[in-house]
Image 1 (cartoon, one colour):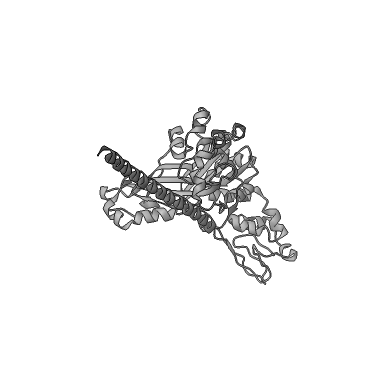
Image 2: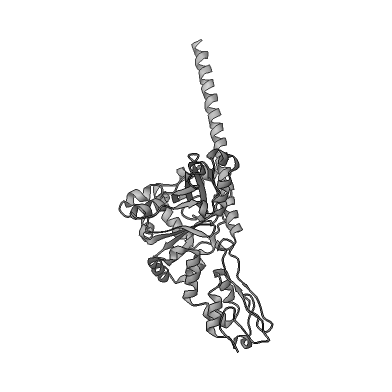
Length: 416
């Protein structure tokens, strides 16, 4: 007979069924199942009705609740029993809460339920945005950017912006360091957008999430990392500048998720790249570390460049080192998001709202390499544009110098 317990004991002719729970969120490794001779349970195979008939639905539920999201989705395709049980919202709620701790909040749970539930939320936010439709570099098109567009064309139709309101957006941000959650923030709406709409629509768009949430919460705790969290100790900043061990550990260990939800159209997407795309050591001081995350968002029919970059910046500062007798400690001092075009200019509030709305329904992929390739392609085109712009400016400088010399020669000729 079947006895409940862990591991579960089957008939004498069968072996133990054992499940390895999902623990590594960064690699999204699939949970593994060990099979018996008479019972084969696997996410990619279909289990026969005879094999599952002797097992209760409670046992299946206990199996599925130990899986990560990717494996749970695969198991739902294995058989009718798994498909039925995998529709339970509680399973997907557990998956989301383990990946995004911010979803444990009651207000966020209500938000997710209102936009379709945890299963839909996971399907929208687990894959990362991929946009490989970056236009090839053509200098003539970008050179006429500001001349061809009228003011109405650049800022867009006012009726469109009445549909996309700043209060419709919610930011859900989670920061991890080596599988440990160090920061979870939720920001409802966009700061300074509702009280000063004309100012917001015209000025560069920026969400400084860490500053605003801390300002609103007087009891907010500082976000810090120390040696106890796995940081390597710093004996001196001079040594760190040479070997860069702390910078390497920080860049490889930090994982960032910035989910944007539109409550009106009931869509959500992760605008971050999970892993750092790059950064700067000792910027702007020798004790600061700047990490850069983001993605490439489509801007077709919104801007001439047809694609923009979502730039998420995170800055840590060294507040204690081993030299002071206190364990090495870093403090999170900045966590912000901006949108930038091909020329490096930051988008204003009007265009940013439209881009964010379209991004929530853009193409996505579970393959991180595709996201990385998309960002690298955008950076390549942006670098080509910058280099061509510098070459054109150099040509103009030489032309002006030559014109000045010719003018001086002409004046001297007539004076003499």
